[in-house]
Each structure stands twice: as structure tokens, then as C-alpha cells.
Length: 225
Image 1 (cartoon, helix red, strand yellow):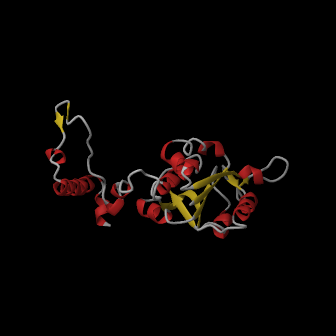
Image 2: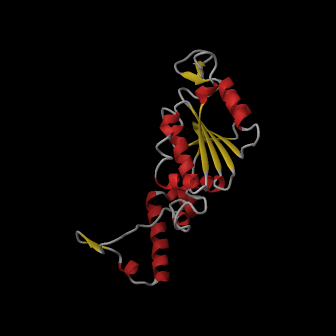
Image 3: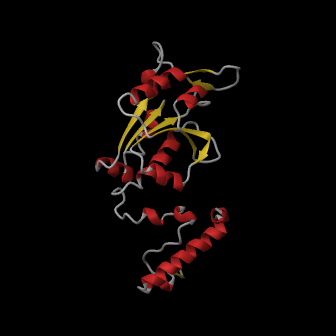
């Protein structure tokens, strides 16, 4: 898989992909990722990428021309399976979407900034509009990191235990059950006996029941789906 990320502040994206699981995925060659500075396609001597919005109002808008030129450059030799704009008014990102996107070969993520991007880029280029929650961020870089992380960890070979991702919360519309590690007793709180029993069928049944109980308590809306 290859991921391109378009940003006006690419420095914000350096750390998330330079550590831990995402870095190892890139080092293993399981995914390639490139961050593109939109200002390299800015207009004029000052490499302008934003302007005031028509009709007045506070906040700048990312201009159509720089984005169009960069997207044209990126898709000149190879098209993208998805061109995603990170925006508060997009479809709320979820595990099912991450599963689907993990099967794609090439994804382009556009990070919004200021008041967003010119609507014409959304009309002409964007195939998916995604939000990571009902709140507003200063830019789409953090959202791009979240979306990328949720996709990359699903690629075979990224996690040491391939079954780990399949047992995560929101797979099968259930939250994950409680987990424990050593010691078996901590400040008077003991690990459930079934987890120490060695009876794997009983352990699996306990985990399923706990996942259902936790989902009913905390996210009953998932069960209604």
C-alpha cells in the first residue's frame, strides 16, 4: 500500500510515522508513505496557497489551483483508489471503513486547514470525505495520522500477532473485553479464575460474554446496528 498525505504544515506529520508500529511497517516495506508540502505548489513569489473566501467572513480558504496542480502531479502516472478529504462534515470514520481501506493499494489524504478547501476541489477530485469526530481541529494532520494508523495496523504482517487486530474493539460491533496481566492479584483485586484455568473454550466464552456486557453498558448503539 502507498499513502500520500497533502498538508500545509507537514512538520506536524513527522513524529507519528517515525516511531513504533507505523515506523516498523514502513521499514518492513509493508507500506510506503509520502508527505507533500502544498506550499511547493503555491502561487507567485510567496507560494500562496490560501485566500479570503468569496462572500466575506472570517477565516482563509485553501485555494483550488495549488491543490489541483499537486493532485494532477500525484495521479499523472498512477491513479489513486481513494482521494480522501479530512473534514468535520465528512462521514464519521469507523472500524468497518478502516477494514475496507486496508485493502486498497493507493490512498491520497488531503488535510484541511483554516476554513477548509475550495469546494471545487471536493467536487472535482475528492472521492471520500471523512471526519474522526464531532469536533473541530486546527487542521487535518492529526486526523490523517489517526486514519492512517487505523488502516496500516490492519495490513498483514504489520502486527506481530495477526489475530490481534481481529479482536480489537468495534470488530463485529463489540467493544473488547477486559484484559489482565501479572500479577494475578493486585491491591486485593484478583484476575478472574477462568483466565487462569487453561480451559480455552471457557476463556473464549467468558471473553465473548464480557465483550457483550461491556458493549451493552457503554455503547448500546453498536448492538442496535
